[in-house]
Length: 397
Image (cartoon, rainbow, N blue to C red; front, side):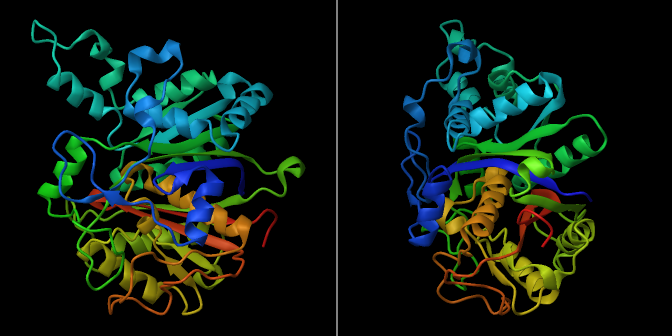
């Protein structure tokens, strides 16, 4: 696969707004999780909440689809100069030649919950909630496409926790087959009752900060986040930008929520990504693990990594900083890989003190002050939706 340049990127989460804040939190080993204070009757758990969403105002022309998710998207777009970079790409390529491909698992469902809690006198939706698009899964992409002024391909990817990793694969295909010259990819997911109480019903929510790969892990800390990246064909103008070198996708076809016990789908997605990048597993310096801190998922992923990668590869989960941001997890963790490539350090695993015996020597608890040349990011979602991305420094390492 010819690489694509990642000419701009940003991520906002509980770890901070923008790349600098995220990198600083990882370097300082300072997590963003807090005891749950979301909602009128907060569930007893820990979350990764982004401050200031409630006070954020989206542009007036998008008032009909104003909701927590699109406010968070607006916050994210305005970090790291991303909005200006994306609009510049639209000017250079044309509005119909820039694709918008975004992942989300909740979209604007929080607004739908509000509409049912606060109905009009006649029992129907009150005026602020009457836009059909507000309650549609495509609300996020419609908002971002409107903000950017694009008229090209616009796709919503909703494959649970792999959503905003799969957007890179979708965008690469659109560019390679001539449907677009550049793509804005990313994902946004925000806190809402359906997610918090839904995961709690599955007994997957932890009453303490999540502890990825620790023997005492008790489940996930649900977070919210917005992240974006701009993908363009590589050339002299962007030769120093980090690159998307490969992607892999697979489906376990095993269970509605549990992973394949031998990690078959995960192995296939890793092999697929490495093949596209024309690399062996030994070439990967850093692996950002899905690492949700659930008992089953971590054990399976740990076994796969221990088997596939050499002992020298460093691997870690960054969810101790951000929480599990669901449909936005893929883009947040892709940005963590890009930070590692650009700032020459590999983050460790926050809140893990005694690794599960299934973990191999690859699992890094402490940060590693070494510059990776190639980084791999894994996203393994409910239903066995798997996506793996390979990133490298500018030029061919």
